Image (tube, rainbow over all chains, first blue to last red; front, side):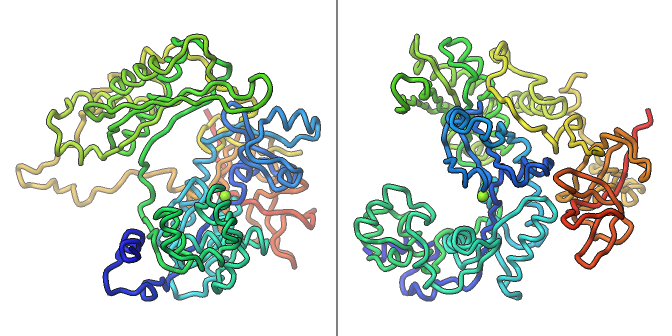
Length: 441
Length: 122
Ligand SMILES: [Mg+2]
């Protein structure tokens, strides 16, 4: 049992190898932007530096990012904005609608600043990356160099945590932020795991946290004392990987070329509750078209397509219980990146999901089972006509040079503005007519 | 414009004949203004002047190319933050580090060096 578990969890594990010898001597840094969306909003608004600021989800629904000041006011992640406004009135924080165009552009600059060191880099999320550190220099000095350069070049403050595996780097980053209140921290020895509560560990959800606490496992140090067989049984191979990573054994190796997305999602809240099937179809068509652009951007085709519908959950009588989200998907035969195919499939699924009279709040599309087009075409019985690919390339090229939506599908007509974004900041970095302005006072 | 026409324009090389053009080895990429003006792409930001700064030769509407990675030295034009808003000034060295202009205040912050000013004339 144990042997099977090891070989399942640890890449490169072979019989005869003992785990000690696999312990990693190198170091990884997790670089994590501090309150990333808020930092982006503050970059060209220096007057907001010490003021409570929050960023709202699409359609200005919920708080998705908070400045430290807003956190200290007691504003929780995920609370609906209307509640915050009702409670704090004129003292409510400054709120921004989310401006992903700006966040993506700044994220690219953060990653480019990190790449300029020439070390291995894995972009983990919009505001986090792992950096492989060379061993010539002391870790603390390298951490300082990373955080200084990113902040100086991009204006975005970052924290750096250093450990020998990704999970330990994450632990170090947690210690830096929460325990020691400093911009970087290199994990010194395993005794420090006692400082870290289990629910702060990477990938331990509330369910596992409760089960662990029942066994009086409170800290990461308690967690690594558990029996690995129990961990594998109760917490799947993911839990076992965490268990090993916390002891310095790499189970999640660096993936230097970043992420190729396994699925593409495009979902948005609607400005008003929508119960008209025709208009839902119009909106869905727009999201499908955008997801398809991303799909072709990775030169992939999708094997499956799914559609979501979510009805309004905040306007129900008597409270906030979540009303059902509905989702169905179906296989695309054959797999495709041709927008008309995807639109047809999405509309068919929407017709199945839709219930007349029901008011919907949010709608979205999910593209799954992505395969690189080149790989897929090898075992294709019926090759897709080349004309389809040429047409899509043309449409994408026109839209990327003339602005998106220069060409669109007839079924997108009449959508109007789908989302309410009352306080979106300018696209400072990507539009000539929205550049930040500097003026004498 | 018919977009399809554009897509099929493929530069033809003299491969079949086996004779390379004598100009081939001398060919250089076209001049790229973006590369010339932006030394550190990750650290460079474009801003628009909202007012005149006669003392620095800047007019309303000018485009400022601001590089946050540029090594500071005395006399460079820089953008900074004073009392919560952006300002421009010449860099001066002080005991505490760099400061901005004559009337510098202790908690001034240097934001970036203004490397180019671009003015539209037409
Ligand atoms: Mg972060």
